[in-house]
Image (cartoon, rainbow, N blue to C red; front, side):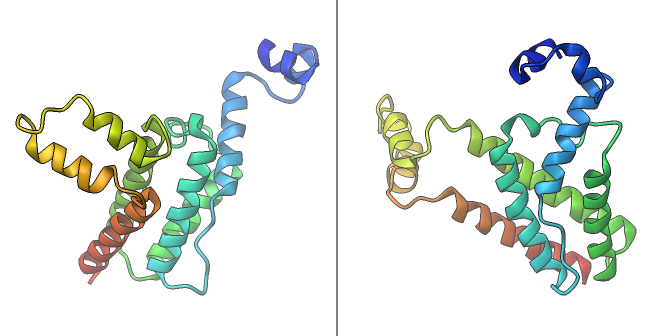
Length: 182
């Protein structure tokens, strides 16, 4: 809290007038991130709504890297957090999902989004060509032929796009959820 006060150019006591402690501050910060995520819309079908939400969620996590491990861990969710969870569950339930199936679909989608965000943010650079070339350098093709082929023909190619990979995986998940729902 002292560091935050210094950053804001105020004394710590000024912050404590608005926030009780560090946990309250983190809860409020997480709520701001949840407020940035697109809520499922009333008019769109469930899969379109979940697709839009997933893309928006990934964008928010990319902007707020620090939030990934904290989003679902807070014991005192704020209004945006509660509104978000209620809207997602409401969209799934209105599409005919049972409570159990809605919980499973929600968990599967969020696991994919969080996992993809962690993977994306862990890459050392944004260019897959640079990453691929760096990965290839120490590898002996005769010792790791499949890995060398994969890196050379996929990772190190211009145009390899993580956004496309995200959407590809998301479509497979949404298709699987739809099959399970039926």
